[in-house]
Image 1 (cartoon, rainbow, N blue to C red):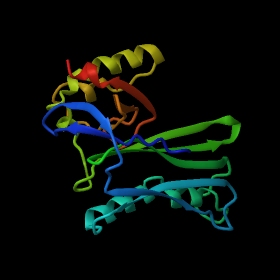
Image 2 (image 1 turned 135 degrees about the horizontal axis):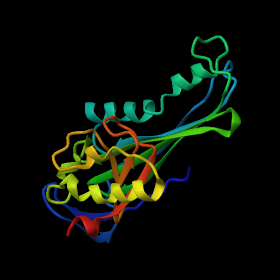
Image 3 (image 1 turned 180 degrees about the vertical axis):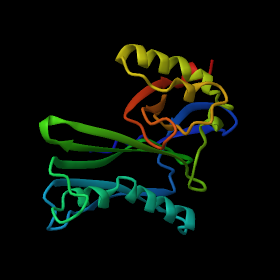
Length: 219
């Protein structure tokens, strides 16, 4: 998957507003694409790519841990075992596994990385899962959802998920999007939207995406 990088400066306050002001390349880190190759005893087609972040400053333990998470979140070893006829985890119906990433927002202070993996089985069945990292690049930690947009109330997200359920006929757990809910959610950012990855409420993944315009969250 070709990464789509937005190098734009955002005035971002973790307790304040978000407003786009200009674009530049004043970024003190770089992102390199890495790949894991399947072993000889693997009977499936495996495509596994992930990003590795390098800082211009000395890498600290948080960045090292983050890179380990970016490498392992796609569960490479799990799917390799499903393709090994000698493994107890072998699945004859399992045919192909793709893991790739997309940089949905990149600035000098914020980095949003989407990891998408899709497993393909017999009878044209496939299962797609998303993970997401929304990072403060000053200390390489996850930015809490509630720290966005001057203290985001989940209740503002709720109507967008209700609308998603109506449009798709799905039954996303709405309790996770009520005010003061403490369900784990998966989320990211683009230049103009908050991205909610729905379908894995309470867990750290989603199966589909809901794009919510930032301007509507700031009302």
